[in-house]
Image 1 (spheres, rainbow, N blue to C red):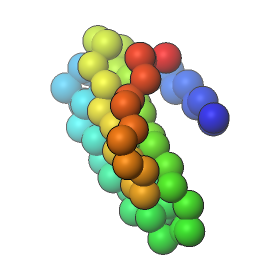
Image 2 (image 1 turned 135 degrees about the vertical axis):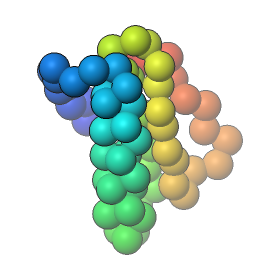
Image 3 (image 1 turned 120 degrees about the horizontal axis):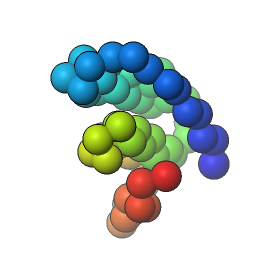
Image 4 (image 1 turned 30 degrees about the vertical axis):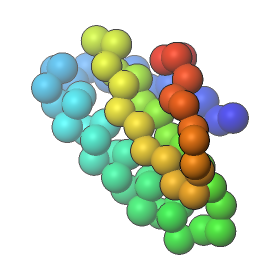
Length: 64
């Protein structure tokens, strides 16, 4: 597991847009590799956005 923490001064709305875009970009890069992965981004308000690739039956864990 790799955990990355980012502190931002973005507004909540901007944070959601940034996290969604970041998730799409990272997923697009990783989908070209021969690996299965799960990415989860927890926002400051507790909301979570996630993406999985090559995994079946995965349950997203509780937010970090």
